Image 1 (cartoon, rainbow, N blue to C red):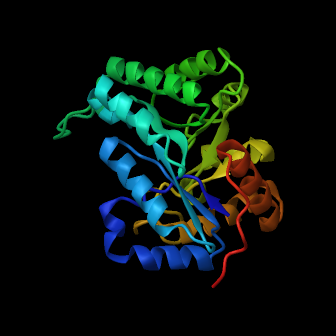
Image 2: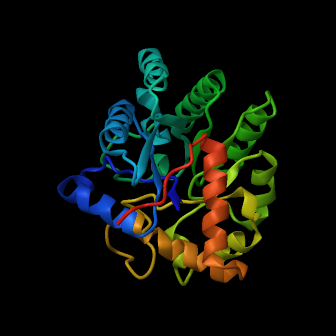
Length: 275
């Protein structure tokens, strides 16, 4: 299995990262992709990918500015992203996109980029990905129509432009619009929640050759660990639930989503994990 979205540089993993990776190996995880949310976390993702990859599990990095951090994307920082993206471990530009939830949240207590600033940063980073021939990892929270419009324009402007809609939450009504952009669909722990009927409908409907698996750890922890810190070893619960919904074998979901991730991110074949 490949966890295509895990924030391993988050401080909540600092105390037991070795154990987290060991549990990931034991659960059948072969590769992990660590997205950045600003310059520092992008650098940290690369450092982790360089430090921990071995024959048992491979770590890769993505670099980018999260939409809520978009006001920090100066030209100097964009140039720095360009340089970071040259690293051998970098397989995508991300996590980038639009977030219409946090800008309107009262008493937030921290500065959040405005929607206009987010759109500008999203476009700049999509253009960077096109220049570097890298896929994008897209964050979309409560900004579904704007996100899909920008994605559609970007993907149609040149061949080879590709990406994934991380933690897809735009519902079944927009699923086919999302698929028309050529993007993959990332499914996470909420598919295991009792009240997630809309996401279950999406999981049934998304074509197997366009599906990716994610944890988004330390967030979006699946049942039966909901409320705890998420980690890659819990990806098995997401796979099991999708297999039930699609009435397929877990091994089929595992094999096809692994193939999808390797195609999208250009990952090399890994050896089977060792205990």
